[in-house]
Amino acid sequence: MSAGTAGPQLEIALAHNPSLVVNALGPPPQFMIDQVKEAGRKVGALAGKAQHAERHVNAGVDLIIAQGYEAGGHTGEIGSMVLIPEIVDAVGDVPVLGAGGIGRGRQMAAAMTLGAQGVWCGSVWLTTEEAETHPVVKEKMLQATSSDTIRSRSRTGKPARQLKSAWTDEWENPETPMPLGMPLQPVLINDAIARINRAAHKSGSGAENSLITS
Image (cartoon, rainbow, N blue to C red; front, side):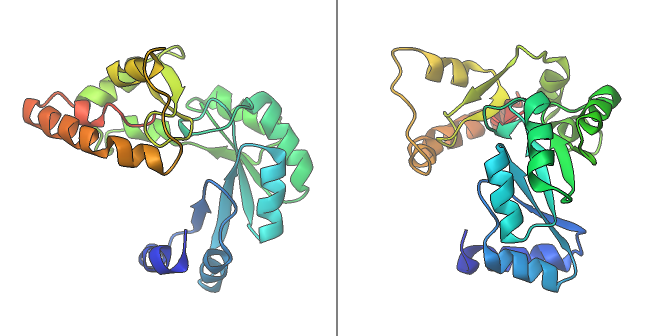
């Protein structure tokens, strides 16, 4: 993320007066922290390890999101049961939100029992009435069990949890070459994804959204 590319996007976001701006995949760049705080808003950052959380705090963030292995999208390898208390202990008085597989009140209570001040939910919002998720995909998400997701590098080159599909099955095939690292994997697959999207859009199957992270 650079000021040249992300700066204008950040300005647009701040024009909508958000209470919080959150960064992932590394500590927020200093220009982002400065710009958000100058606007009187809070800065958060996702962390998959205690060491990551400490770096975020040193950079100047206001809160940490402890994102466990169970989370959708890019995620690390430490489960929430271990990660949340580790990060709470590591960052002292900085507020921590628990994230990863949280969709029910019992899971919210568990995260707060582990020391989090609250929770951060993502995938669950894709199943709401207000979400623009394709109905077919929304139903797949609602019907999915804990065995129906996979951490795959097939989309971005970094491990990201998503619903299992024919796409992820093929990339898990032992005869399939390993995915490239970020940012090369998206370059490799973008044309294929575009063709899938066009075909799925014409058929109305919702498959154009079936490769989203869960």
